[in-house]
Image (tube, rainbow, N blue to C red; front, top):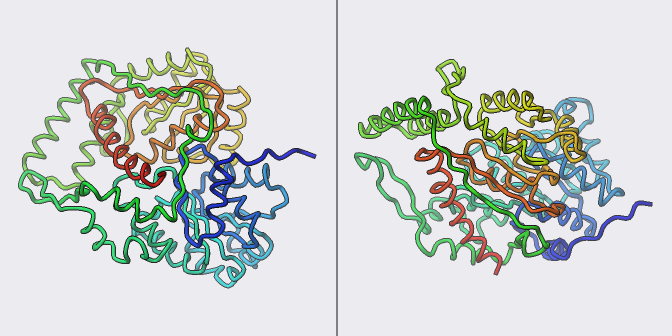
Length: 453
């Protein structure tokens, strides 16, 4: 009989913290094994559990942990292909102790499975930043579904990916406004001040007040538990290093032309937030070596950056490379093949079965590198054979950045590792890493520091 490894001390502390409380936040850093803690909660209590998870990790994280650590628990994973079969939802909920659905299946459960929820009184929502937007259909449906459960736990290793206001709706789902109030605008007015921005001061941005982070953290501390990976497990060293390179002349010319156009539009005062984002994206695409036309086709301008990344991968035993645009994926696939590097790709087109096989093959040494798209692969994957994470381009999404960097920096990592951020000198790429992501990290770190103490 296979011996099941015991819980880490911090995982037991997390489970013990959750069991007696009706509402809890678990904000431990990625890689600390939050899934195992929640499954331990289920094993200790008589409650049937509904888990709402990103689709990409329903099987790789929840299903695999159940198989590995709790093989006696009967669980079912929602499959949209079968939802119209007779008695599908009845069978799913009545024949399992734990049901795992994806974020976008909440509406289906509300409309087709509500009668079968009567024995389910514990709700677990994995990666709760998915419901930070209170007006989104997914958020409204989750809020409505949450009323059906007595016990609720929300998980995320990066709880405020943009700013402090992101925490309001998840907190409202948990306690109905008991701690942060039942009105979002009142909450925002309490923690932010409006600041006029733009050439004609026509835009309003909400800036967080100096003491707001600490005040919010204190308010939520009684229902929040957090562990830092480095505090609870002896981890090998991890280095974050920017790799700043000079932009080729041809690329710099295209970049400067686009930058001049962006400045003229900004100075005109007529640019919308949408157009501003489009211009920023185009500048980053040029840094990525290509520019897209109106038909969505990429024109390749330069491959210097990807020649460098190919060399970095070739010098290492196993690596992960994160890309943003399909042209980056296509360029690197060709260069890796030419260099004799065995590579696999996980992006939005990769099926669950393919993902699982790629992870298994990579861990077993079949591939030298996995190319990953953050939106599709930032969560749930364990790729600890890698010791290097390389960013071909920056992402504005801080949650994706922090989560992606923990695909190989997890409990099972035994070697020193590094994160390399390849970026062109004096470009928007540097600003995204140094200003945008750094400021988001600073605000979130302040919140999490108070939550820990």
